Image (cartoon, rainbow, N blue to C red; front, side, top):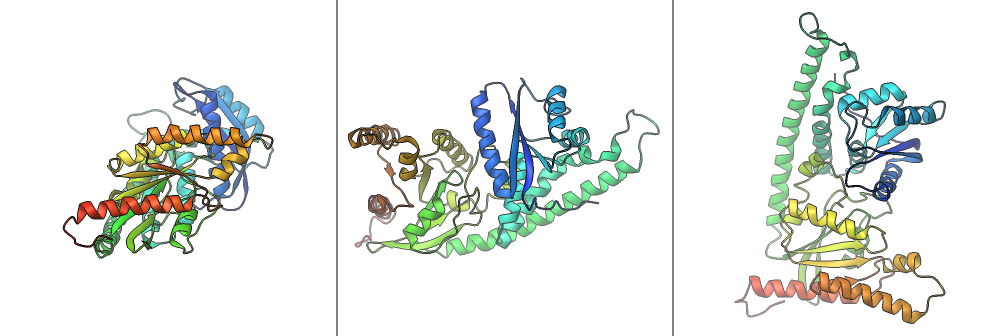
Length: 395
């Protein structure tokens, strides 16, 4: 019968595998593997080796080619490697075939993200959402993961007890998914009632790629402790605080970070958590300006917002981590005039791209926070005027 997967736990040594497919460059795949290594670290594993291969499309049996799989096998053989992680989704049969060849536990990026979510889920809602996503991930992979169904041939005499067992397991998983969906619907109903009880206050939501500093910024703006650490998906559960800027009240919510290649079933399961994004009046899109692929991360977030039908909302783009940007890209001998010119060019570029709806800050060093507060305050007040035009007193 089905046994729930255990968390990775401990610090395992792991090998990462990526495929350079059509319309991808080796540099891009290297960046994806950088992120995969960070995900592995977040889950408690340490990447000790990377393998990449150029193929027009994945091998249907083992994802990578036979020669590359043999190369990986030779590396892991006799070493203390407990895990191999592929950067793209694998089918159940691919996982089975790879594990059979390598003799090492194999997972894919989606499985890794689910493991992190499972370890970090704190509330009943988050735990149910993660469990639902795990079973949705498992369901289409059941057949391929049954190692005793490897007999070849067809026709009379090939239908054995294994198929009966897999059908039983499939029914168990489907029943479990149905039960979890009902439980999640009940939790969502309670959450919706709570959101309605918040009254007429303008609602603002922090959104962005994972690990860009949303929780640090939430702590700074709300002056209350919000969990934050330098790991991916430090925040899973939505945190909402009532803030008052210059006698103007509004609600500020921190939300789960987005990431490239986020499993579809995970997005589906977490849609109720992301209701804070859909129902927000204003979005604060936090960007890690120091990250070498920050523009690609902006694209990932915008695409996810489009999927959530939240892309047309008023957005203030907050370029965070100015301090790290200077640390990474400014030589200590660089003249201050040159630094100012670089910042000026960068700001002009994004002011034009965002129609002047952006600000550059450092949440860690509390740099330019007053300017950010003023921008948020102006946007909140403008919305109050639009929403309640006949009020004699606006906040």
